[in-house]
Amino acid sequence: MNTHLTQKQIDSYQENGFIVIHDFLTPEELEEWREAVDEAVRKRGKQRILSQEEKDRAETYYDYVFVQRVNLWQDNERVRRLILDPGLGKMAADLARVDGMRIWHDQALIKQPWANPTGWHLDNPYWSYSSRDTLSIWVALDDATLQNGCLYFLPGSHKTATFDNVGIGENISDIFRIYPQWKEIMAAPAEMKAGSCSFHNGLIAHGAGANMTPGWRRAMTCGFMPDGSAFNGKQNILSDEQFASYTIGDVLDDDIQNPLLYHRAKPYREKLEKISG
Image (cartoon, rainbow, N blue to C red; front, top):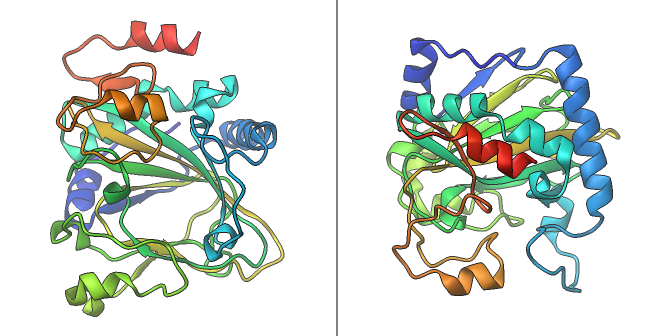
């Protein structure tokens, strides 16, 4: 993996709320990521979130936005080796200018042929902690193009975002009811060749186009939580038992649920080796 960041890239991320890193993976690494994610998604079946029971429900618009499988690192050894890489944690910490990063959750996000667009939304307001420094990596496992549903960002929107949000629904512009000032921002498409990646802030407005092709558009993502983040009362990916055990303000430092990937001062490699087996 190309984990080196220049100061120019860090400054650009801070200013715009996202960066694209081309040729992030070598061809051999790309093939390993593809095989690992495909295997993990296939073995997971229809269970979207590992820690939560999948309940019978009517299909919605959201089900035709993408195929989503969360925390594959927890039940697939190949994905675990990829995601529990301190190099990813250091990149995230350097971009956010924080001391340490934990995993919040990974997600396979796969746009099936002719999938719906992903409406404008923010990430962090869905999650069980609130931080202006949280961010995600998005790794393109297939070419992400204007035709098959590449990401779009509203540059700089992370600076004025609050923690108000909308769901990913049929009206892709719902976000502008909350943030009307963003209507004048020109959206930036993030086309990427397979093996490239992007990082984006948890409060930047972003979405993805429809897949207007008969092919699949696969991506593997991971959200990184700044070390020391506190529980805000939302369940999100937490199991019922974990959710019940937390009080608002508790630090989310469970190394089994949210491993510490990297910290400038704390030892972390030994813990990762224990978690990864």
